[in-house]
Length: 214
Image 1 (cartoon, rainbow, N blue to C red):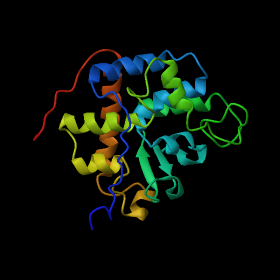
Image 2 (image 1 turned 180 degrees about the horizontal axis):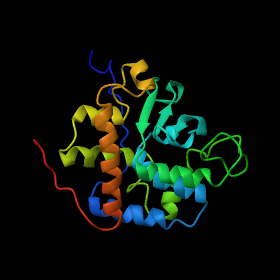
Image 3 (image 1 turned 135 degrees about the vertical axis):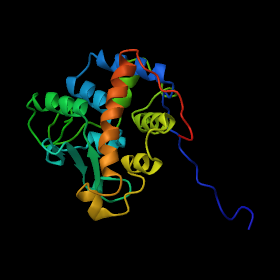
């Protein structure tokens, strides 16, 4: 059987995992001088850590400002079930700023030449290159790795809550759609804690020290 089976290649997305470097990244993003919508997309990405396609294809009908939830429909998720994202105060503020631009169309981040399509898959990576981060240092998908690594290292949150926030284990499609599935309350608290922590990193303050086993 040797040679009959092939091992799938695992694609690792570059990400800055040192908290100090993450702070530098966040400060650089805040100073992005390109299109405002692109800057907001980069600012929002670390707070919601959706997959790149889920973020850039987001539509306003998915955002519930009152409930503070972003509901990604199943047809746009990797695992093909709905995924609910609790929105922190910081994420809501960014989305309201984006809404105030009053762009026509349904997409949060419309393309440059038409509001009928979202930004292309390379837009955020090109913006990161403009900010001076190489493809080996940081990609738009890397925001998920940052969240996964630092949330786990904090030792404050149940691993299953982190996994569900990354849409790795949303087996109950009904629960996912109505965002009241397992660990939802913890995920709401975690979302706000995470955004607060990102702000501290951006400001050059508190750094997480791993708390494994707590």
